[in-house]
Length: 283
Image (cartoon, rainbow, N blue to C red; front, side):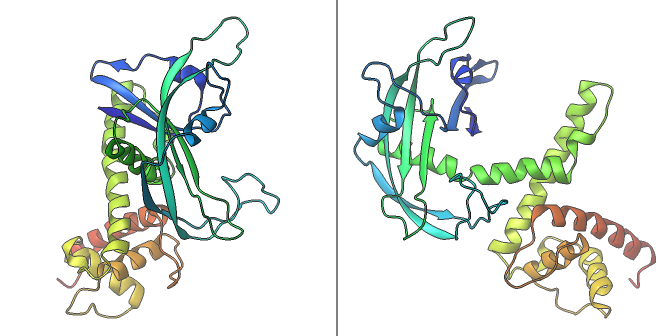
């Protein structure tokens, strides 16, 4: 089973065939349109709210700063980091097709999962995820799995941002599709490794950096930045990842963590320094 997770609330997408040579593709899309259900004419949000709560869970809400002072859209406004307690319910609805000039679209039947924060902090906009999906919702465990799928959507966004902005896959110019696919295969692994190292440095900060990096890599970076001989005990992974990120433009602060883009640029410098160390270094 393969899934498409994201924000692509386009009615024509729901009408498309999901059968492929590798099996059926499932959709998991955060709704942003006020769509009307067939029959009683209520919205799919109203239909989801009319269901019973299947389970409660906690989700981490990241901090966000609005790019514009006048920003009023809920998905873009400034907010503080917090842990939100949400309630989830699910139902199946048949959606009335929107008007399209030149032809009538068919009705589609979708499963709807609503994850909503009933008691947000004072002044905070409540978390509300209205998810349209083709995944099954026969029991609470399946609904819980759908919510957990969407909870990692931001990591998917970061992965593709790393692939496009860090690896600059869109800037590669090749004459054949086969070359593009080969390049994409290699850079997909690189983007994954950058994300893995970035997360590992945060989640397991006390690990020895020598579990990940060769001596020629961490020693050359240490001497370049600290201007002193490397210690006998390798630094921690978190310290090493911060030093590598600083090679890519990150300013080391206790209150922040380096992102994938500075890690990407820093790791390129690590390769150069490691090559120089192995060629000319004291070892």
